[in-house]
Amino acid sequence: MSAIDLTEFETQIAPANGEESAPIKPLNIWRPSQFLAWVEPPGSHLLLPAYLTKGELTTLIGQGGLGKSRLALWLAICQILGRPWCGIQTGGDPMKWLFLSDENGIARIKEDLEGMFSTLLSPEITRVDEFIGLA
Image 1 (cartoon, one colour):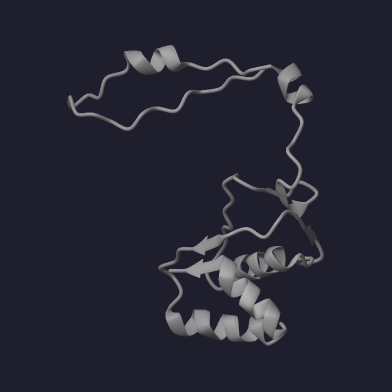
Image 2 (cartoon, helix red, strand yellow):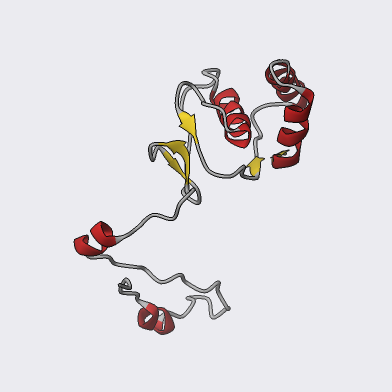
């Protein structure tokens, strides 16, 4: 079963300023029966059950100082090591994680990592270092 796409619509759209634009991704419209027939690829969940799925946009939103950055960093570490996170089982093969932040400085991130790494063994630290990037 394939979803209906709107590629014909894409060819009718021209940029307003006459310049080239990035290609528009087709909009897939699914029928309820297609959702029900869809079989999820194995290993696609990062948290089990389907709380967090590989390839899906996820945002942690909350007031400053609540610990969103620490929770996200700890989630990455737990997923890479196959450990539960906040009592929720993680899943899937270790993923590459990239953290982009303009909120926390180097000293704060270093302090968080020192605390988290103090609970890990040396081979686990090496493994985490391989899969996490921070900017």
